Image (tube, rainbow, N blue to C red; front, side):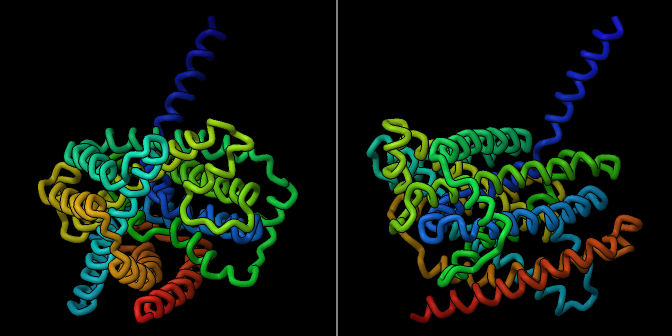
Length: 415
């Protein structure tokens, strides 16, 4: 009888552990979009396994930053935007901080919305032959209804499911491709910068360490947890979810390095052609499903990230059910629906968004460190010296990458 009771308790405990996943999974599903999949595919095709370490670095960076922001959201029950707004008493600094965040994230999410929808449509188009410009708006309308539902649980379940689909698809494909595991581990743990790879390294990191995800997680943890007793659950949700997301990105890079090394890649869909010898007729279907899941998760996260950021900065207290929140969500996704339907490729806007994000990432990482040392807001839960050192190193690297990205974007825009 006692053994039976222990078994029941153990099963219940396992189910409870599964329930911790949510905010971290939303962040992971957010950064694994068509842009990430395409970037990882090109990285593997161009440089083999040599810059796989950049994926690992980006995952560690994301875990550190998102763990900090998770603690902020749980303790204060407020978002990052509110914390930044209240951090400064000087009205000029406060105004500049707020509007830099609002404009950068708003424009960035609107610009990326089109690419995310077209990336989602690419998966279905590969299988059906129907134009992406027809499929993308339909997908956008589905996402619009998901956002307007105002249900955090629905969004959470959709994101967790898409992570599962992407994991099964891309990780299975990696093992079937049979990579050289010795070279894989060397590329993962022996950092190197092959000639001409710096832009690709920045792209790999930049598609993972996404500024609006900090605002997103600070708000979503409030929907799930309400006090410091939940820190452990929140930490494991972040670590496991983002590690899984990083493993999926790494799997795409490894597969690409194995089967299409040296081939000029236009999009991640090119991967399916090279996988036909190992996957046969399943190749196109596997990649199509993975691309669809990646696109749908990111296309949902872009308007969600913009809406959460605005809600946090302007103190809209009703969360996902607030009418203003829904207006921002609908506006961003509608921009994507319209531009994807007419085949518009907002290159200038994307370059502008890249420049803004080049400024925003180091600024947000520095602001986060300042906020996380505010004893008046966080009390005994401020950063430790160890976290400040790690966060400082990350902020310094983000600043360097941000400046490089900004300069590259400006040069591209001018040319």
